[in-house]
Amino acid sequence: MNERPLIIALDFPTGKEVSRFLDMLPEEKLYVKVGMELFYQEGPEIVQQLKSNGHQIFLDLKLHDIPQTVKLAMRGLARLEVDLVNVHAAGGSAMMQAAIEGLEAGTPAGNKRPACIAVTQLTSTSETMLKEDLLIEKGLNETVLHYAKRAYENGLDGVVCSTLEVPEIYKHMDRTFLTITPGIRMASDSLDDQVRVATPEKARGLGSSAIVVGRSITKAENPHKAYLEMKNAWEVLSV
Ligand code: C5P
Image (cartoon, rainbow, N blue to C red; front, side, top):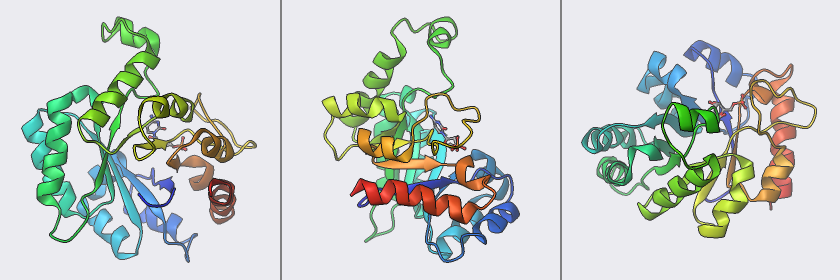
């Protein structure tokens, strides 16, 4: 990832709604995130369509399975020539290595393999959940950092994390390790269901490699204006 992109989360149920939204940002070549909701409805065609319109793609499918299955799934995703994919770090070291092997095997000759990042702990996971549902006695911050280190050691390119976790991660990992951070809001925006949010300026100050923004843009009265404001706050100040 050369620059520090603003990634728009295309959290829509259908390709039609994606097109309606993208028509409002006509002249922009975007970096977009396609998640499970959209991919499971529209399949690889939505990726091909977005690519043919010149957009870069983060395919956010959060793979977590036995190493061989993840390897073969990643081989297929690399063939789609997406830019960024992810796995759950909880799948373990062998699975993370298998993900990279699969991506390398599926990347067309002469192309750069998609970057692969790890989900550490979902932002919906609480300390109580860790203890009571997962029987993990270590604290949330400790597990996030441990999973991030494991991702780094196993050749992944970065992690998805909260902006607030970024400084701690860079105490242990070098700056080439990507920190992709959702939970971004302009100061005037609604928080929706996000708790640990940051403005783009704060994300930049804390050192995020990229921000992921959904509703602040997709649900804005004027998405183009909201996108430009967010992009300006992030990019102009992130040089
Ligand atoms: O609408 P909003 O800006 O909150 O959307 C954030 C996007 O980032 C959503 O697609 C959400 O699923 C994703 N995400 C997140 N927190 C994580 C991982 C992904 O909010 N830890």
